[in-house]
Image: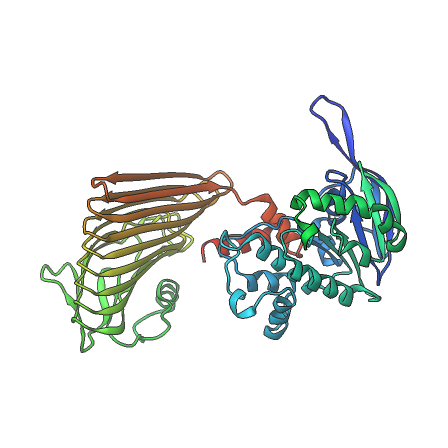
Length: 247
Length: 308
């Protein structure tokens, strides 16, 4: 479905030297499978997603979608070919409402479909359909609307960048089951989830650990999860100052 | 609307959404003359005492009626000037739809100066909508200089929506309001300039009454070589609340000046302002492109939403 060949992205440092944000990545994503990309902050996960979407231009290497070389295509052309990306921090739009954006994501969606997409991500359509995407929505609400758009797109490759960030635990459970239902064993699409979440990682088919721009570990969730579990859970504890122990 | 031509209908539709003769009271003015006029049992529409404009007198307690007073200018080089007075009777609740459309295909300038005086009597509610629009391929400018003076008596409420859609080359919009006890005024301005257009908006709210409030919300887009100046002054003379907000998108080589002024003359006056001018955020464009829009389509969607 999606193949990355020797993919690198280099940036210039202020002292005149160069640095690879991602370095020589070779990966293949198959339809019907769910992939997790994890690893420490600054490891290159979001950069990899943005290079696949065409937001950043690779310095070396190629990107193939269903055998077609899409390395030189624009963001728009990649989107039209079926690549979808749910932003980690989605932008806000003054004057556009939730319905406007979902209709752009999926032209021709009917009223029932639109309401279902919102309900799927735990938002009541009555309350949210006409809500402005300006500054009044919370981070968690904006995030769920972002996920609803990507689910609505029915992309060939759907990339979710930390979908659980800012979303409550109940919704994380719901998101996991939605993603499983929509992508697992679906011969037409692949899901790539950038995540640190201990509830999301073990249910993926494959885990890819990216560190300092390179693939450090890669394999089935059964193989990789036990190796990284302590790290991930410890990090979560840091974030919540240990409160998670009492849950 | 037999005596109204195709261009006239086009202009009327653009500024007031009219496609046929409206219900209730109205006055349609074309090139300095009233071409259609009607009063309703509760709303008198007729010439003023000086015979240089219109008097619209709304009886106290009139509810749920709309008055249309559109103006169109189609004669090349014609410069129309009119003095209109609107009196909204005590306890009334009505909508006034004004606005001006200019069609100019010539090399001479055409224009309209509409001087409106609006008195909203005790406890009355007014929704006032004014749209401005210009069209035509001639080099002659389409100029609109509206002046609005509005007085809100005790407990009155008014919401004024002033919109410049497109095609107006030069505009100087002056608005002065006197707001009485517990009265409330909200002015929403939406403006788009392009080409070499220039738009100046000069608003002054005298918030005089105890418990009164006034707010000015401006959303504008300046494209190409256009220039916009937004001046908004709040004068708080009593225990009152006032707020000015200017939000603008700047594109190409356009310029925008935003000049808020807060004059607090009473320790209980709470006056605030906020302003933000900037280009379209790159991340907004990228987001919409990642949903399949081209860059141009994404810009159009953002601007249309912003000015909606």
